Structure formats: structure tokens, C-alpha cells
Image (cartoon, rainbow over all chains, first blue to last red; front, top):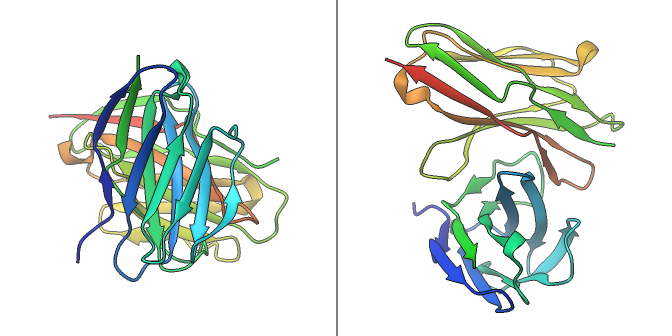
Length: 114
Length: 113
């Protein structure tokens, strides 16, 4: 079965612009989580969606937002981009919103802000 | 506070050597989950193991083994007879009571032929 698909794979944006990243989870998975990975801060949790509802949110400013659609696909949006937003953004999907289920990760979207 | 420490930033060994990656965690929760993930150069995180706080049995899967010790808050990962394909960044993570994954900084493992 198809894995987690993230689009686009690479993105270059200018400071001040906004960006939308997309994540298609594995078919049948209802939970989608987003993570930011940078060399300085490592992997940090952004937010998690389950059945179209945001269940948890990490410690990120309001410029970072997301949503989940009825087909479980998720998008995250970053507005007013800053240089520090340059990172690998990873999406993970799992059957349920529980640590007792395995999370499958996509290959990520590498965002560069110039 | 919840925290995961992977003190080894980078480890380099020659193929066929055994190697242990250390993971120490901090949590006040009595129920928690610990994970190991592998991140090859392609970027995606590959799930290796999940262990809940009530199961201290060590686990072996092929050349991989994990040693969970609550007394020392450690969840170490050993690769026996390492291979070049094992080269990757390995992350240890802790799931808190909100099911958020808290990640260690990762250990870059280099296996030289």
C-alpha cells in the first residue's frame, strides 16, 4: 500500500511570503502529525490532527497552522516566513491518535527561506 | 519536564563491529512509550521499535537489540555485526501523556567498510 506522501519535496520561498505544505497519509489512517527538523533544534512537534480536529499543538507561534480534511489529508501553512523557518517538515500518519500505534513518516518537505 | 538525551552525537565504527547507541529519558509520567527511529539520507523516519513503560523485557530483532532499564531511565540500542547499510541517524523518542513525541538530538552512525 502507498506510504505517506508529502508535497512538494523541495521549496524555496522569500522572507515574508507564506507557504502551504501537503501530506497524504496512508489509506485508512486518521491521525496526522507534523514535525519540524532543523540542525539547531532537532525534531520538534508542531501539531497533530485526528478526524479533522487538532488534538495537540506544539510550542510554535501562530504563524504555523494546519488543518485536516475529511479524507484525512492534511496541510500545514506558515505565514510571514522567516529565515529560521528553513527546515525539513515531516508528516507522520497513524491509524489512531495513540502512541500504541506505529507512526509512518513521509520523506518530508525541505523548505528554504531566502 | 520530559526530555530525551542522546549524548553520542556521532559514532564511527568499522563494518562487523558491534555498536551501542545510548538513550536516557526523563519523565514524571508512570505510563509512557519509548521509540527508536532510523533516518537514512533520504529523510523519512523509519520506525524500529516501540516499548511501553510496563514492559521491561529486552527485545531482539535480527541484528538489532534493545535494553530498557527503568532503574536508570535508559533505552539503549545495540546493532550487532554492523553493516554499511546501517549508516543513518538514529533517534530515540518519548511519548508524553499528550501523545506528543519528544525527540532526542539523534546519533549519526557511520559504518565504514
